[in-house]
Length: 300
Image (cartoon, rainbow, N blue to C red; front, side, top):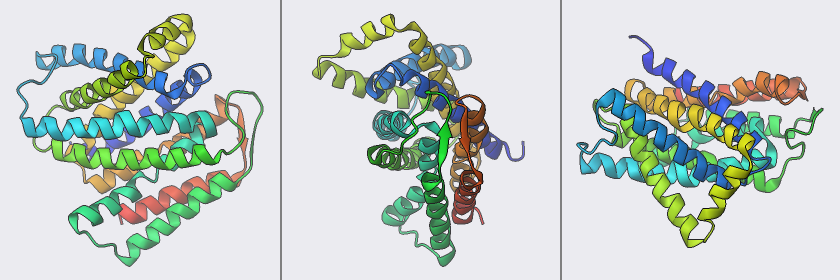
């Protein structure tokens, strides 16, 4: 099917926008570390069932060690470390701006490719970076008001910085995943390998910090927030991440990553209707400018 990879990338953006809502709502009660542990655990269990039903085995044990290595490293960098910064960004600056900062991921992908694969930047690519950063700056500096206490109204420096770190983690994780998904390999199988690495990393850290039991207790005490994490886990690491792996298998990674950077556009109506956020034309134009810059950088 023509453009199936591009359509999968668009679907990924939509799923990540929905997951941002779930994790933001859960972040009113849970800290980012608790959210990360719970959502990875729920997604892992869901994918065990999906892989067993679709592929006949819960874990792809027949995959090569090389594939396991790339996807494991991708899971640690992207899902464990990168998403920790993303959730903290959601809590500190809200999902719309958090996702807008995440749109820097394609820019970082270009720099990583230049550093490690010797790909040089053209003047057009430099121009794309400038347009993207200008758009992000426009939105971040634009004024908005929130009529209900559901989303942070201030712009924390730490939150903005964490959003940038999240973009760097996603960019690195996507490049590593591209290596691990070479050939014809199930996206669900690739996702569970990534989640396997993330879940081990996160729970070992929890045990060493002696707060693993606290995670279960908090989930039991706050069923509503647990439900929001489950909502985010389904649309994020289960469906969204699997769709992203499928996309990079069937589309140019530049085009795919550009389309995956569209959640800020999806978040505009979501923020308006769900969070009752009011923003001016500057936010709309800035968001479109940022996405246009990413398109210049990686598509044109």
